[in-house]
Amino acid sequence: MGAIQAIRGTRDILPDEVGYWQRVEAIAREVMQRAAYREIRTPIFEQTDLFERGIGEATDVVSKEMYSFKDRGDRPLTLRPENTAGAVRAFIEHSLHAQGGTQRLWYLGPMFRYERPQAGRQRQFHQLGVEVLGSADPRADAEVIAVATDFLRAIGLQNLSLEFNSIGDGSDRQTYREALVNYLTPFREELDEDSQMRLTRNPLRILDTKDATTQKILENAPSILDHLSPESKARFDQVQQMLTDLGIAFNINARLVRGLDYYTHTVFEIQSADLGAQATVCAGGRYDGLAAELGGPDTPAVGWASGLERLILLLQQIQPLPIAPLDFYGVSRGDRAQAFALVVAQRMRQLGFSADLDLSGSAFGKQFKRADRSGAIACLIIGDAEAESSTVQLKWLKSGEQEEIALANLEGMAPELRQKIAKGREEA
Image (cartoon, rainbow, N blue to C red):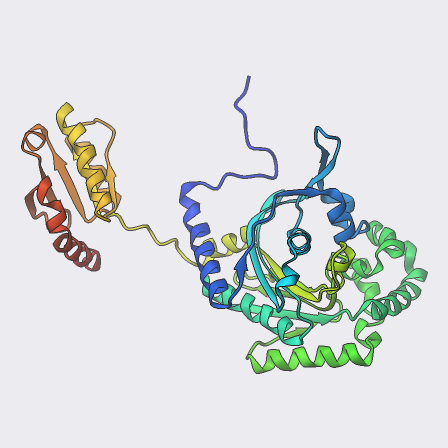
């Protein structure tokens, strides 16, 4: 039998890459805390009905991409393909609306969609997202875009562009839907296969097509912006002015729609050119009708999500991963020395230092070579003589200076050792 491998569309995040993830996650927590967003953690599987009602049965996500199954109780369940529906379900179930005011939530975790795996897109993928529930104020729209921009810039992305649009309310979209269908129907046979199916089920999604022939047909299609009510148009203008006041440049893209049925009014994508081609790194919008659709109170809301795999891919291209600093590397020879070395390394860790202990049992020469490659500032050298006297030979790797320290004196010498390590790191 062959070795078992990871399932297609999933991948292992190995130690050499994990540092990027930890950095992005730490920055996300800091940015969210500054903006007064509170973290929420929801289950990775939900009732299938949540996504069918919330996202829309005619969407590609529900019709083609969900991982759905029945459990032993014959209940239809689905691994979450996105987390807005789950966050709103939790908002309703736990009566967060009863707390009054605006609920600012954020989340980070794995999602699941059955798509063709490619660079930056997996069947198990990770999203960072925010949801602002309970505010119809256009400032909420501008705020979530500003928070997204702060986060993306904080992790190191600079060449960002904001694609921005309004798809109006339900009445606006119905009027526009009719106009779009009337325009496209004479071209039905020329449309790509997906667009032909969407013409009757979800015609606005045709605007997202990547098919060149359909894109050419859409060049003269009616614009959603010409079908906004005066109220929707005024709201759109307000958000634009707020973004301008915040110094956030944007491009109005009348063809921008989102793939999920719950969106209303503001929709947006933030793209990065750091790889030389435009790539969406964050997307979202307003979804005022979702809470009511899921059986909760009428609750205005706006949010976004960002795929971490794509962000990590970008970061790996544009910046090196900082190496985690190592203070001490321990080498030992002899049975008593090896046992005592474990005690010394653990004591160093308890005092707040980082320490790596060579467990190979190989000759001192090979251990010293690994110490040099480790990036440590100093080497802890322990033989049976040191084990007998409860001491350690401390060698500063850059200068070659060596000193003997008693284990009993380590705590008292800790401040001095920290100063020497800091100096050694500056000189490295």
